[in-house]
Amino acid sequence: MTSTLLILSFVLILCIMLTKVSSRLGMPMLLAFIILGMLFGSDGIFKIPFDNYVIMEQIATIALIFIIFYGGFGTKWATAKPVVAKAAILSTLGVVMTAALIGLFCHYVIGMSILVSFLLGSVISSTDAASVFSILRSKRLNLKEGTAPLLELESGSNDPAAYMLTIILITMITGDFNAGSFVYMLFAQVVYGIAAGAAISYGAVKVIQKYHFSSGGMRMIFVVAVALLSYSLPAFIGGNGFLSAYIVGIVLGNTKFNDKKPLVYFFDGVTDLMQMLLFFLLGLLSFPSQFPKYILPALIIALFLTFIARPASVFALLTPLKASFNQQSLVAFSGLRGAASIVFAIMAKNGLASHTEYAGNDILNIVFLIVLFSILFQGSLIPYAAKKLNMIDNSEDVMKTFTDYSDEVPVKFIRSSISEGHPWNEKAVKDITLPPDTIIAMLQRGLKKIVPKGSTVLKTDDILILCAKAGDNIEGVKISEKHIDETSGLIGKKVAELKAEENMLIVMIQRNNTVIIPRGNTVIENDDVLIINHS
Image 1 (cartoon, rainbow, N blue to C red):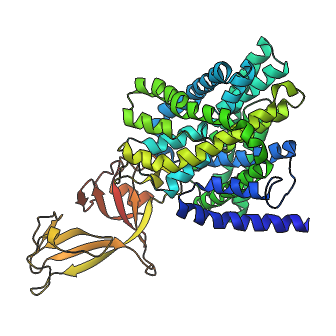
Image 2 (image 1 turned 90 degrees about the vertical axis):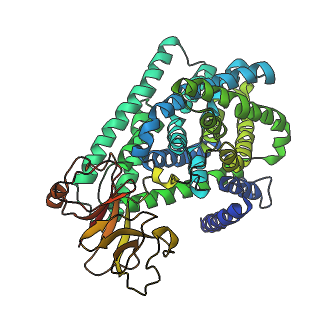
Image 3 (image 1 turned 30 degrees about the horizontal axis):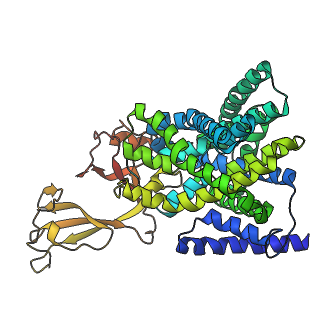
């Protein structure tokens, strides 16, 4: 026990250190965890024996629950809503099309049996949310045309479809399959999964908003329990637990309640831990000495998946929805394979344990190599592909697509008078140098309040109101910035109503490029930025 804990702590510290090294080398972080696992494994330096696939499946399933749950919890619905149709089609029909194309290719080109071919296609048909999220965050990929939320929503929601296909194919191969059981399994997976997700979400929201938790830690424990329940309950009755977990995650992640941000950080850390543990164990479980036998078929399948199957599915489904060629190209190339594919491969190996003629171990090794190729090749080149396709938009902020993005940014105001000898006197606004993160919010000239433009010339006795990011808070005073969107519930309300209902003192409203000094009858509009005094 002590030696196990010693090794575990040592491995976790190494994984954390590797995140820095992999970032500097441009190597995807998850690949570093796998390589570390290989070094500790039976074929590595430390020779730790580990080949218990049943225990690995159980550990991997728990890890995948949190990864999929956080895939929903971390996605901001307001930014994802415009691309829901595209994401839903890709995460369902896209998964089926990809699995079918891979299945046909493996059967007719690689020479696998028809059912094993489609099983392999099902296992690698979904994209990996953890990998996609990691790249978008770490590289700060600000993408055009809502591509970032599209990739996040698709990768977070397509694992349930791949899981359902995998279970169906395993059942067909083992012979426990007939038309009636197929129809019921399909019905149970979808209907029970959605129903359980909706019911658990409803109950969890009621509890978390109404119940007074004794501490923030208790709230975290409750949400962890909800995440586990969201998978286990539907899975117990034959439903799709991963689909339910994703639904519950996205509902809770976009519900307003107290002390929510610490939960985001908590699950961010838990997901990172699960990724470290999962990919390390997958590396530990692998036998690199067996890889030469599978490298060629794995590489051929990976190339077909990356450059034919995935693009064919994306273009076939997104072209009717009028997505641009560049967006479709980037979405097609960003279809990373990761933890879910290997977990489903382990499920396939365990499910086919008594059917050795179907070579479950072959599927696992091939999938493992495909994932390595995807993480190393695609993961490293996504930023380059986005740049070459002219899909980078520096006016956007990819962090806004996650629920841990803060809409409220502390700011402060500075009052400055222009004297006769002031260096800005008689200069146009565009010709003066402002401190970093500072703007001129308003100019008062006599009794007039002017919203300055670049061509506005400053005069003697002008009073400038400068706005800058706040440093330390002033006791008793808190001024912040709040962005208004469809989820805020404030659109269409008058300033006077907000002061009465929300106890808000709105100092200023920024609307597009215009600064408004609000009155009581000023109506709040979508995309307004409110400057609020909470004192």
